[in-house]
Image (cartoon, rainbow over all chains, first blue to last red; front, side, top):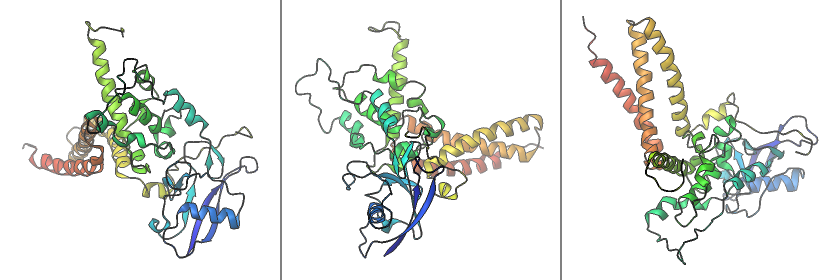
Length: 247
Length: 111
């Protein structure tokens, strides 16, 4: 079957402005073909200069996130049989600088992620081994939010990234949530890092991130958990008899 | 960037595809903000022209929508299951429509 693709093309070294290029791609009779198969076919047989990222090709690594027909998703997971008839538009992720064609520069995103301290820091008085039962409230609160593959689809879909480019973004706040909600993790100053102007309060519950996540995670759920936690932390500071750090 | 300039793709609201792909959560956000601005407009109009039925109706309508969508925000803030957010949007709209006509029918206009 022949599919019609309209792909975003932009080489900052050569082009002044981006453009769209149309390709006709014959992907045979299989109904299990994906957008990635189409991109491979284009690169191998029609235009070797087409640039796109991929790695695992089975929705595990998050490298191939693109915007297909206006909706973010993984190219290796987006089946062509689910697309409406007509031209399939493939564009790079939004709100992230474009390196070339469908490849975006994730440096800024990773820098923001590093600011979260996105790794587990154990408490000094953790029992060994620290036991969290699978049916405990804590485990059920974190749920599947740890499955994030950092593909960037949520960052691309969140319109708050447009209004505030310094907004940490659903991906980074989701990671912060997984660690803050983990009782084994040392408190540190994670909460204060995300409570600033570009943190959790930039989320206005659009739910675009939840809609496009290829792992069916809801960063909004995590962010709202953090908002509730910040709210109660604020009350603790009002207590004149509190022990520990002053406000 | 290699040549010093940076190009970032953004949603273009002039593109019809963007609106076709807009999902309920985003519509709820948009309607909440638009109804807030309209409340300011109609409230001001109502302040200067208090006895005009159309202005009263429009003001009541936008307040109903803003309030019902606000209840949805409130429920999710308090911890409602995020999987229900689309259902809550539909429920909020229906509540606003029925609430609006219920209140408008039973308001004692006097005379």
